[in-house]
Length: 293
Image: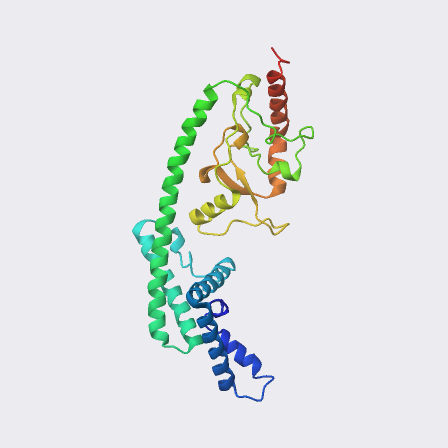
């Protein structure tokens, strides 16, 4: 794994460090390190290659998370269709060539051949990745289409639905834990639509179909940039649904936007959502217990 993480430079790094405290030459120490690595590969057997590939994947993922990548750069993120795919594939191919050449340098192998192989792997990986993303978006669109139909059917049905997990329990003022799932499409320029008590009681909250992490990843693929961070905390902004899940909104990329936790809570407080949801829950409890006829 160390060999993969360092792009083949682990032995050289170890030999260089040891040379500071040894009377042996760098070449002797490097030969000893490479012999030890070969012995480790022999002992690992069939697990050696997966371990090295895992190390390389960890290193690559770390570089991407740190922004040290060509992915989405040079204006390729904004291009659509085959032109965009070709441009992003070319960039990925170039990045793959750099990784291949770096590994060959560490292993003292032919850098030109390694760069060519890396370019092929980079191009193929991008085509495969974008293809899988396109398939996932189509599947998600089909599933959410079915979800819309089933939600409409539920709204026409009868019977109370429990919202114990969807309404704040402290008199309408949200806690940090409770604020996360509640979103509204209201803004200062677009006040929330008035909903009668009878209409409100018919609303059935949509169950979560995707995690916040999955939604953030979908958003990043669509916008070709990382999910925004809260400048005050340095953590990811909240995954805010434009139409609240508690009001039948979909757990889908088209229905989310990033908001800071502070803005998220203020958004619902100003729109009166927490009080409305608390009242809804109280009315449903009364109806289910026979308290309201």
